[in-house]
Image (cartoon, rainbow, N blue to C red; front, side):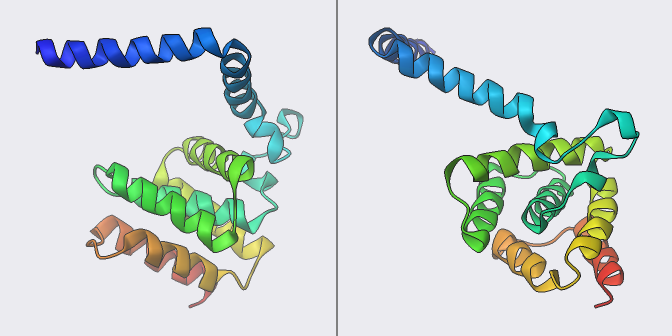
Amino acid sequence: MPIVILVLTAVAGAIWWWIRSNPREAVSLAEDAFTTALNAPRKIAFRRQTKKHPVEGIDDARLAVATLTDAFISLEDLPTKDTRDRARNAVRSHYGLTGESAEEVEVLSHWLVEQCGGPEGAMSRVGRRLKKIAPNSWDDLTAVFTATIGDTAVSDRQKEAVNDLRAIFGQ
């Protein structure tokens, strides 16, 4: 226990020293994170006045696939950090996303899954939206899912979700 406290103290000290030596960079980093989280709903043109669901504002197939991937891995009982990292990397590499755009897509996908009331609702609602905006995106979706799954087993809930998506896309 004393070793854990010592390590945590050393990490906190290093962070404090970095903030003290680079205050502008630390403040800029905090502002960027706050702005990204604050502007997430605006990015997909969500307007509260129209009383439409946020998914109806999706017009980018990359965002829809990222949201479906996030919902897909959330269907596991307890998705591991490794699974989340694989999903993030699969979306980034398949669409060539880098930096800020990849971070925005990730934040928005988490937010959209929450707005749908969980992964089950997100799979069907976002799946229908993806079919509407990009009818030929089944191959992209399966490529990202395959890269995300890797060699791990698929749960029954995930199999049902994929079957529902197949029905939506007519596959």
